[in-house]
Image 1 (cartoon, helix red, strand yellow):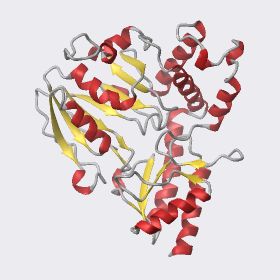
Image 2 (tube, helix red, strand yellow; image 1 turned 180 degrees about the horizontal axis):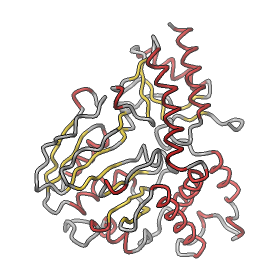
Image 3 (tube, one colour; image 1 turned 30 degrees about the horizontal axis):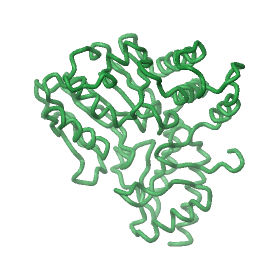
Image 4 (tube, rainbow, N blue to C red; image 1 turned 90 degrees about the horizontal axis):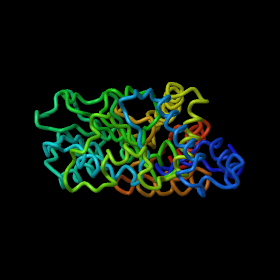
Length: 362
C-alpha cells in the first residue's frame, strides 16, 4: 500500500489497482511518445484505435466471449440500459423481472414505460436480504426476456445459480460483480455492467450482446443513440466514446490477465470475503444482514443494531484510514465493498479495526 493511500471500501466509484493508477500517471502527459494525453487524442486516431481494439480483445480473452457476441463500450452507465433493453428487445411488449434490490427495481419500473413488465419474483418482503427461488418462475411464452441484477450492491446478495428462464433470453446487470469470477457468457443473451464498481472509472457501461438480438426491429420510440445496432455497426464509435474510461479499463484488463485472470480473481475474492464473513459470524457486536447462501463476494453489509454505535464506527474507521464504510442510505449500518482491486491486507485491517472497536465498545 502506497504512503498516504487509504483503504477505499466505496461501492462505486471504487478502488482501482495501484499498478493501473501508476501506469496512467506515467502516461498522463505523453502517451507512448505521442506528445499528448489519451484524454486529448482523437477517437478516430490510429493511437486510440489500438487502445479500444486491444481493450476489446483482452476482455474477450478474459471472459471467453465467442464471435457471435458483440462487445460495446457505451456512455450513459448501467442506468441507461434500463431503457435501452426494453426498447431494443420488447418485441411482444412483455418481459419478466426478478426484483432483488434497488437497481433491479429501477430497471423493472423503467421497463413499464415500454410494455408489460412482470415481477416474476421478489425479495422485498425481507428488505432484499436474500435471493428468491428462481427454479420454477411464472414465465409465459409471450415474454421477450427475463431480467436480473446478478449482484446487488446495496443489499449484498448474489445469484449463485442463474434463474431457470424456461428458454427465454436472460439479461443480466453484473455491474458490481463484473470480472470477479469466471462466467459462461453463452448462458446470457446480454450481460452488461457499469464499470465504476469493479472495472474502471465512472462514465461507461460495457454491453456484451448476442448478435441475433442486434436488429433494426426496435420500438419506434428508440433514439438512434440507444439502438444496439447503431452502436454495433459503428464499433462503439458512432459518436465520441468515453475515451479515457476505455483506456483505464484496458489497463485493468491487462492487470487482470497479469494476475491470473478470472479464476485467480475468484480465489482471491473468496479468501477476502471469508475473512470478513467469518469475523461477522463470530462477533458479538456486528452481524451480517444477508442470508448466508446468498452472500456477495463483492459487497458486505453489516450492522451493530444500534444507530449511534454504527455512526461512531463509521467516524472512527474513517479516522483510521478505512474510507467509505457507511451503508447505503436506504439500508443504514455499514457496507464494505471489497472488489478485485481491494488487497487482502485492506480487509485484514478492517477486521482488526472491528475487533478492536468491539473490545472498546462492547
